[in-house]
Image 1 (tube, protein in one colour):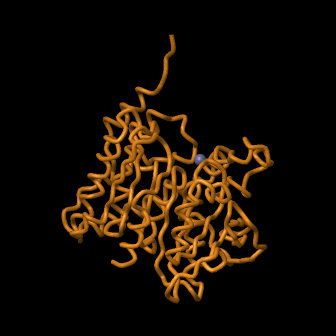
Image 2 (cartoon, rainbow, N blue to C red):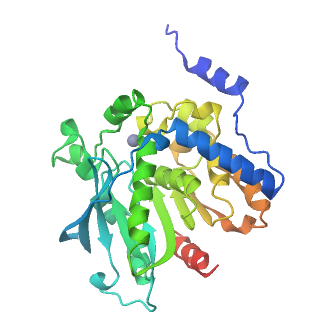
Length: 340
Ligand SMILES: [Zn+2]
């Protein structure tokens, strides 16, 4: 016999309210709601506690990675916090796209390693983006890739694919910080740098799978500079996917979030910007009801887009697989978003 706590937390969720549940019926009410929710999210993620600093930057080297010619850069995002990232340019990768100024695409990675590993599993998508003229940046998230803390460092496969999110979450909580708050801050600072490039057109897209989808979702929800967002394998109701699956990585959890909003509200914060959600029909991380747990949240998101007459800017692509990136329709989505 075990006397467990899961039902207690499910009851807390079911009997509680989300303080910022989406209810706006006019663009004016939406604007007030968006501003208030963003302020609250900045508080509970610790985003508003991150410390501005000089954006010290260095181009360290150029290397071959998973078939790409990638520049290895570092950027200081908080005092003493250094984020390495790969930068891939079309010309260096054998394509000569038309046009002068370049759109920018950030591809944050998920939990299967760091910036190098996504060049493998999202390689086709990245190559197509280069062909379409994008400059592509792939950063290491805090605690992953070349930012792993000591116990996870090393070249053994299980270490390469591991991360230090649990350690960083435990340390951060005691300072009012979270892993996702730090990740969003870093993506904001990376965007500062990318959008200031003389060749940048000003169009910024972000696309990620799983933990990369999580970073994309929160980043786009909190920063209007993201013109188009793609999340794969990370958009679902928190009850089925995080409360009933509490073994998920610590980075998924934010103090008070289950009392504040759900993922449908994070999507609603992106309105009316183009937003693409990819789901696997058999993805266990969507919870026991699978895609139904996604569409319920997308209905909330779409209600916000409807206020702008922009419901067609929300795309839901469901494939027949599990927790995996397919990418079908994403190239057309980005092309349409740029032409909008
Ligand atoms: Zn994590």
